[in-house]
Amino acid sequence: MSSSRPPLASNAQAHPLIDRAQVGARLRAIRKHQKLTLKQLSERSGVALSTLSKMELAQVSVSYEKLAAAARALSVDIAQLFSPAKDRTDLVQPTVVSTAIDSAAGYSTGNYDYHPMAGDFPGRSMTPMYARIFARELTQFDDYIRHPGQEFALVLSGRVRIQFETGESISIGCRETAYFNSAIGHIYLAQSDDGADAEVMVVMSER
Image 1 (cartoon, rainbow, N blue to C red):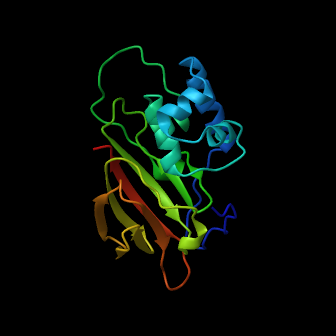
Image 2: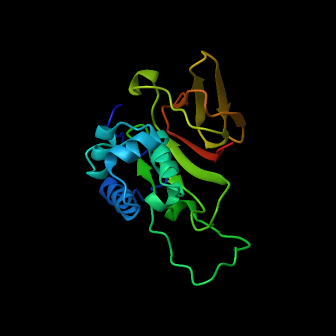
């Protein structure tokens, strides 16, 4: 996977990106708290032991797929890898939480920047995420992205092609949507004729 990151397009807003060292440190802290070895986490998550080690040591940026697999194996919300879980003195389920896209901490994979939203809502059954897509070619990826569940995407700006490992693809523009089985390998590619990045709001479920 390419690790080079192009400059922001002139019409794109800057969004905060968390240092991968912080993500790695949080992953390690949660694993240690659960008294799991890297080998045990690898067996549970299906992520290679060497990859997990590099993730914890901030030696590599990885896809959502691998971070989500590690989070599932640890039985934590992926948002906890981006910000520490807040101590709660009560068990009352909130009615609503609100997140500003421009201030949500994000992570760069080298092809996407993605920012989990509403991480403060406990026991979420959906994972909403803002993403900036700047990859434009399939060759920029080592493999297709796969994770359990279903996925809904709404393009906020630009144009996106979602390419599936089946050979199918769909091209959607601003205010257009796609809904698909995310267990089928897929890749988002920016497709605007002017070379601009694309911005997408994605909502994922695990079933």
